[in-house]
Length: 253
Image (cartoon, rainbow, N blue to C red):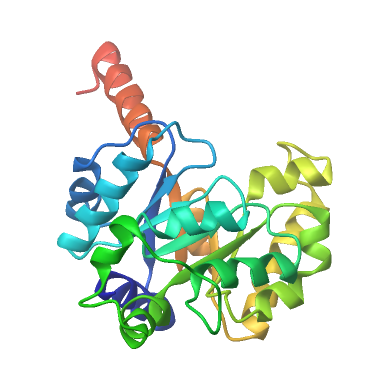
């Protein structure tokens, strides 16, 4: 899929690659808005977001039509959930709370066609490919599909190397807030949390992969990340609106 291929090229060549996570408010026009704002990708959050399947399908289709990468964060890692999520047509997944390589084995089974996996494609996802021959699934979907396993627990940290080295892992990811909760410092990052963040980044680098992180864009850039999620899209609106209201009330504009 061309949007996935181009996103991977940016990350693989070390370009600053910026996106947003949509949790509160999603609509089809958000895909174009993100592209026109200069972002490189959008993640639709189905773990916490209230979005119905048809809306996500339509956003993924819009992304394919305008060549803009739309990923999905599924609510869990069950095979049935992953199968339904890939049938919606995203270019990849942000996977919540990955703790073991065996979980990624199940993701592989749900994403890849037989004989490498056990995917049974259907629905809107079938519109990705020029025809439904196996080689087209491999070339047009599987080859560039993006999987970002989020490390959010102590068990995930214990299995860092195996998760990073897994064939399905495109880049290592982290959920900094949930990880802080697991480490008992929510939200007051301590030395253990900072060390864990470094370990995740180093585990990715050790196998030649990038590290994805979410948070303050300039801070993450300065910390050496180039694959960055700048935060939740509605929060950008809130932040900007707060500043505008303050400026007007204070007479600074």
